[in-house]
Length: 229
Image (cartoon, rainbow, N blue to C red; front, side):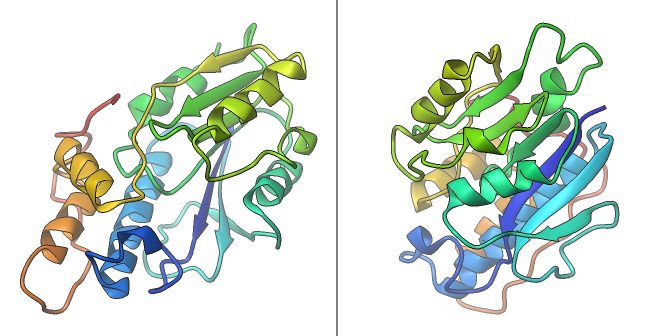
């Protein structure tokens, strides 16, 4: 089976989702980040895996469910942190970020099937903005990440080329829209109306008052979520 990694930041106001401010306050942006992370962890928890690991910048909070090992991120750029995350793994490993709360086990399923790695060395999940939301390796190789420029509209293109230039056979997961801006947040919430993220966005759009992350509605499963953008 495959190891599943989630790379994430502790949802602290002023440190996460800064491109959401404005229109949202740092506290509201952090609540949205916490909801997105909780949705992501829930999807990973419901997917089959050999091991589940949260690679975290910060400290775990009440949003972390049982079932995850937690390892700290190294210092440095995101390319270096991705390299270190894979360096700590053996065997097939798939990494996802915390910016796609519409994630479902069904979206991950192609890379987690028993035959997922037959004739395949890498899985790649492109993001709509030119980045990527997932990357998986049959044999973790930390040298595939350093030097890739992050947070540009060509990051995904360059990272995927790094994989193919290394001779890896790459298969793609669906393109997803990640949440960076208020427009992204509205679109993703509309496509996943039953998610914690959508509930947090509705709360953020209410008149000022205390914000809290609402529990997932009973029987939510994947109801109301999209499987591809």
